[in-house]
Image (cartoon, rainbow, N blue to C red; front, top):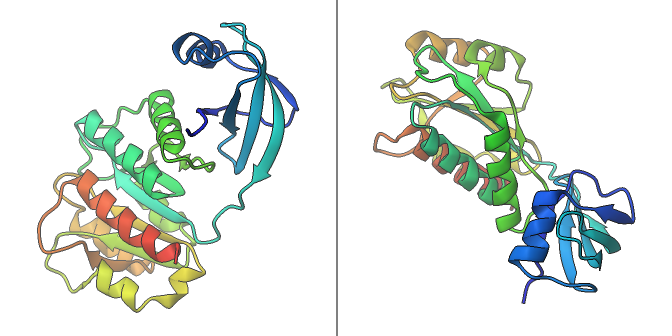
Length: 240
């Protein structure tokens, strides 16, 4: 059976006293005991096997017995996606994007973004849970919300895409990626608009700054669904 997997912020010491919530889960919920093993990750590439040396339910202490380091992917995928009115839908996107392997998430504030409330601590905990559930050891970077204009100006990534619904000239993202071999060695970013889509002005600004216009299929998608489709396509290609 797979060992239980937990997140800690630091794996630099050979002996760690875990936080109270984690300790309670290990000792009270899972009923783990002295000398039992578990896995830990710092979300920065390290994964450690540890053994319980003190089964205190508030201050469980473990000793690391083996530590491996998984290199960061050279071909990271960044999703810039507008916040949406329904917080649970945005949370669903964060969970699934983490499971798929997105490396960076930028919440966008666009002209038509209707909700700007952002609970970073709660959203960060969702990323952590998804990372552990999918047995990964790299936690996606979650930015604070950023204005659309700032993102398009500051982006220096080689492969830049913007998905929108206007009937402008654009290619399907899947077709574009099929002929985009540099993506296997370079990072990529795609921008996903709010409910109601990007404005014409926002799209024009992005195109002037080198973003390629793309479509995500033949149907109109919700913001979080569009983010999932884009994440799946980009992560699949960059993992090849």
